[in-house]
Image 1 (cartoon, helix red, strand yellow):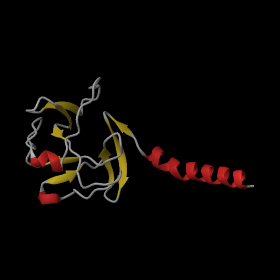
Image 2 (cartoon, helix red, strand yellow; image 1 turned 135 degrees about the horizontal axis):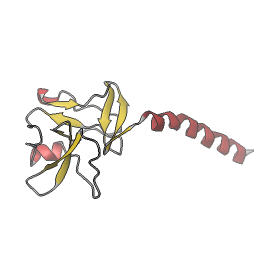
Image 3 (spheres, rainbow, N blue to C red; image 1 turned 30 degrees about the vertical axis):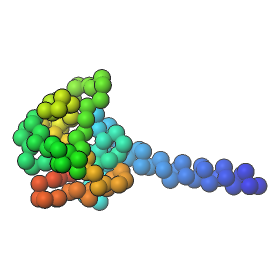
Image 4 (cartoon, rainbow, N blue to C red; image 1 turned 90 degrees about the vertical axis):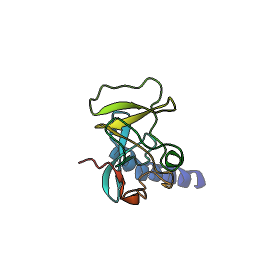
Length: 132
């Protein structure tokens, strides 16, 4: 009886968790996440991605303390640029980061869970990337 109850609980958890996985859509190197602000771009781990108004298209201006608070969405090995909306930005430290429609992308260090959007509107210069 106990084993049967555990199996039932495990099956219920899989059913409950499944819509979250189905709701995500792959977009280039990122995914999408459902948040209180709607559908936004997210990293592969489901963490929300942001843009910075002080950047220029294809150029990041977030380094040092800024990059500690707003870690760049770094390019992994074997990056695929098949989608024209995605480009790679060279950072002054030799790393590369992703840009969507020319805008470099960042995580917010204070977002704790996938789908968090605590950084949206910070300093009136940080914004989630909403997807329609």
